[in-house]
Image (cartoon, rainbow, N blue to C red; front, side, top):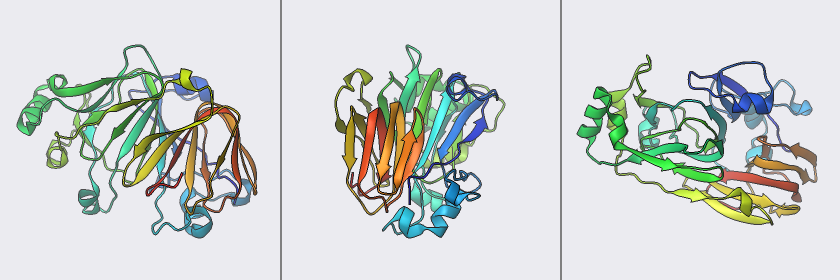
Amino acid sequence: MQAIRVKPIYLESIWAGDRLKKIRRFEADRIGISREVCAYRNSENPVLNPEYEGMTLRQLIDTYPQELMGSLKDDQMIRVALMDTKEDLSIQVHPDEAYARQNNDFAKNESWYVVDCDPGASLIAGTTTEDKEALREAATSGKMDRYLKRIDVEPGDFVMVPANMLHACGKNMLVIEIGSFGGITYRIYDYGRPRPLDLDRSFEILQPELKTEKLRFPLENRKQNSKLTAVIHREFSVYVLDIADEMALPEIDRYRVLSCVDGEATVITDEGSTKIDYLDSLILPASSKNIKIVGNARILLSLRTPNQL
C-alpha cells in the first residue's frame, strides 16, 4: 500500500482568516477549518489515490485494516486539521475518555503547532485560577479574560492541550491541530457572538488545575537532519522532523501521519514515491517498507502511542 493522500474537507467559520485561501488558492471565503486527515463519522476525507477511487478514509480503514492500521487493536485514526483565524475562537473544553464514552464518543486531546501568525499572537490554554465558581461567574458576566492563561506564540511553537483543559486558538494565526479521535466540544465563552453555550456540561468536565507549557522549535534552527519530540501522550505522539537532505524511517507495525509545515519533500517506499508539499498531509501505512523522506522540509510525524518513531 502506497502512502495515502486524502482530499481536505473545508468548513466555513465566522472567525476565519485568509492565509489558507492564499496558500491553497481556492475561491471560497470564510474557510476557517480544513480537515486534512479525518475518519470521524460524517467527516471522512475522500481518498485521492486512484486505486481506491470512490472510497472514504473510513472505508479504506475498514477494507484494509492490516495493511493500513497494522497491529492496532482499534480502528481510530489520528486527526489533523488546519485552523486559519482572524478572530479569537470561543473558549471551550473537550471531554476525557470516561465522559465521552457516556456519549458514544472518544476523548478529544489535541495539540497545536503554529505555522504562521502575526506579531503578538497568543493561544489560551488553562486558567489562572482553580476556583470553578469564579470561572463560571466570569463566563456569565462577560469577564472571562481575567482568568485566561494566555501563551504568546511564534511560528514553530507547539502547545499540548489535554482533554478537560479550558482552551482556545487565538486570532491572526494559522495552526495545524493534531489530536485524538473524539468530536465533542463544549463552549464556555464566545465574546458575545450569538451562539449557544454549554456551561453546565463544560463545568462538569472542566479541570482548571491542568497546566501546559509551550515548546519552541524555531524554524531558523532547521539546518540539518534532526528528530525532536513535541508530544508523548497516552493516545498519540508527535515528532518534529527537520530534513536537510534525506532521512530514513524505521518500519513499524502501525500507521503514521506526515504533515509538512515548511519546505517540501518526497516520501519514497518500496511501493512508490509520493510528493508532500507545504501543508500537505500523508498517511504512511503500517505495511510501508524501506521508507525515506527526501528533500528540504520540516515534517510533523504523528503516530499512536506507545511510540515507535
